[in-house]
Length: 263
Image 1 (cartoon, one colour):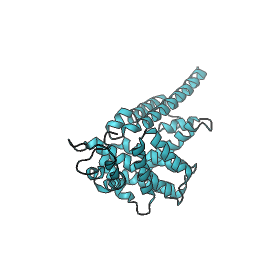
Image 2: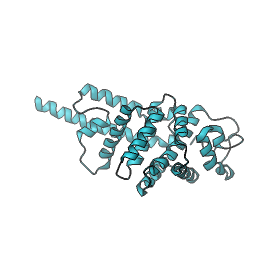
Image 3: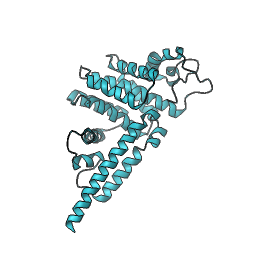
Image 4: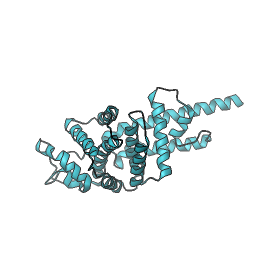
């Protein structure tokens, strides 16, 4: 991570500030005494600050969501570990991520201040916020259920970071469709493919093309990283683009077969 180990006269937390900085200072400060090098030539760039807050908010809020129904399931812990593996964290980085997850589980965790700081750092970069929200939804669904308490908590998180109820429902439906498409446990339906692209089944070919191009642009890994997604999360964005491409190809194949049948 480009921000990892960058501290000037203190810890990561001092540079980030706010509630997220406080959490990072608490869980990560000790690593500067374990040989992590300081950078004394400059402070965080704006993008490094966004990457840092994304990392900290992602794992701490995952801990909060896992505990919101009163029970942290093994599947929810496994999901957090899967995200860590996707990010290829080294042992120190993984330990900090685990501590962030545990902080999020605490009753005194300051959810709203953390979300507001994350949203402020992201600014109008809605695609980065959407990736964050999708990770939280996937975490909540990792145990195979999404109860009312979890749904309400996710909707609240969405509102705090800038999504209205309609937008939240669209993102939620897209994630549900994505999970069905990627699980391999059931036959992929065209309805899921359309929802994955943010469309209703029966959309025109032009609408499908526009939606596909929009999704591919929104989730282009390099673009997301430039807007604040940590480099280590490029695999998550890349996987999303693969799913969009597969859904688009299946829809196009279906549209072509229908056209051929007519003619």
